[in-house]
Image (cartoon, rainbow, N blue to C red; front, top):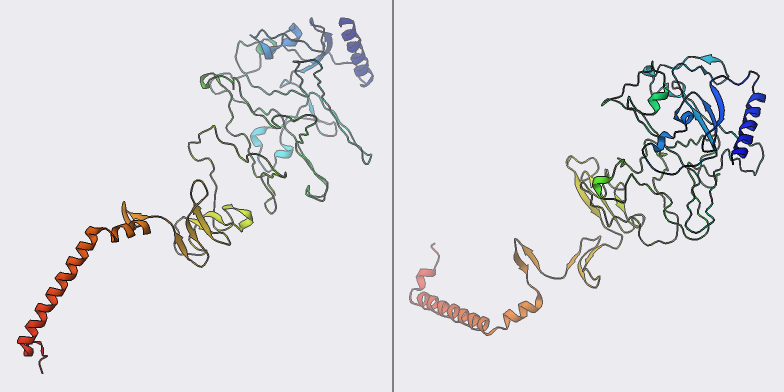
Amino acid sequence: MRRHSLLVGFALAALLATSHAAPLPRDRQISVMSGGEVLLSRGLSPLHGGKFHQYEGLTTPLRGNLIISDTLLPTDKWHSWDGKPVQRFDISKQSPENYHGAHNHHQNVFSQVINATRGANGIPFWGDGIAVVNGANAWGGFFSARSGCHELDLIGQYLPKSIGRECGPEFDAQITGLEVDVINAGKPGVYPNKAKHGIQIVGFGNPNGHALSVIAKDFDRPQEFRAGQFESILYAQNSIQPEYGRFIVADFEAADIGLDFRKPVFHNGAVVINSKGMGTGIIVNEGKSGEIYGGIRWPKAADPGNWQTIRIGEAGLRIVSNDNMRELLTVDNAGRIALTGEVSINDQPLVARSSSLRAWLFDPRTLVLVAGLMVLQTGISLLLFRKMARHPSAGAAAP
């Protein structure tokens, strides 16, 4: 293995020496580490001491083949797109309007394919890992972006003392694990035009697990041990085509569940939407089965209050029992309402069920009460008739 690494190192040295008019810069080195890895480096880092700071303090066994390291210093020289020397840009003068030409960009490895062949796939980088024994693990790629600043840390021992790192409670740095740029000079990426993907994940072989899995440190341990959780899992910032864009598209025939939120409890709503009238809410069957939306009562209405509106379906609205066997309430577009069951206001029944009404009408006590009321009414009527017969002028109207 050491002999193979040395051969690789010599080959890289020869390649670098022949690809530059000037000799190899003094700050660039090719060496073989104690573990047999070939190290191509510029500037000092813990790797020169045979140390991988990424695993500092851990007991993880490590092994590698080719390692490329670069230490970017404030004293390094910069150039423009055409190779002319330039000074670093003062990012305090950076703004959204000038950002494209107002940042400083350094890449450690740059791989390029200029594809001038129709029908060919141009791939600048392909990482392939294969597990060939039971229990092995394979990754196609591995990226990490980290920040760290401690005055006595391992990296600090390899940096110039003149660099002010400003470690402490106010330390901050932007980190991005992976950026994928899609720069389209052709037609829009919608059918029937050619596709333009940011990230395309393709499954092969037997059924796979998650196409996209987001985890954090110690995700499989109790909450008090976890760290590094994200504020958002999926965040789209002014990146959707406003006229025909769709945020999430499901283009398949069938699945078991759409959104599976059976485990988490959301403290401020499982779904929160901004609705401003018809067509901006939750639409079912493209509107044929209605919609639930929010906003003002009517367009251009004087009432500015927010209403929740249910726009019923073409056939109407129905509320059914839990077993989906009985219709409890139906409303059609003509305004007809059909209700099955009891209606109560303030816990007082408004309409009794027909079976209960029949039982009350045919109850013997009800019959006796009705008969008594009829006898009382007959008696009162006879008394009034006799009084009028004795004094006929009492009932006559005054001239």
